[in-house]
Image (cartoon, rainbow, N blue to C red):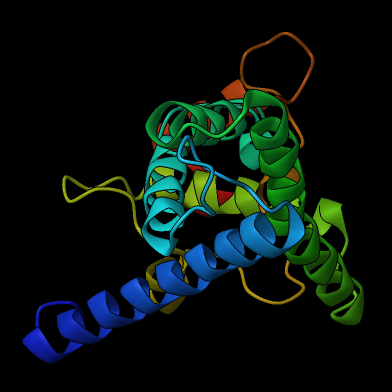
Length: 195
């Protein structure tokens, strides 16, 4: 829990460390890979990459495409060009390669671990469907429940149990098709446990 000062301090410290590692990646790629120079024709200092890291990461709060394609790139380029005078062409190339360097290793590693755990993309989507249905069924004023809380309370299936979306066999809406609206209607009526 983040209620204790020690836990809060640990999370803050690890967050700063993670951002510094990421800024170091920006720096290494920018100075050693692209040899980026500012308006003064000197290599960009480390703080320029820290600023670019912070603003680019905060830009991911803006709703955008999966992988933050587009907004992340545009904002990182604007920071480098506008704040530090990097030429637009090298800044664009740098940001595109940087984005790939940030996104691809994590994505590849994710797929490796999916295969290692014998999971498929369908398993993940079914897990999300059952989590959403359980969360809708147990909606509280405090906000959405986490998966761990739902499993601990026995309200979210674990292991190889069938998911809620697969258990609904008869449409509620009368349109002949079991869809998300039917599952939501059942969840709101409190009938999910009866299926």
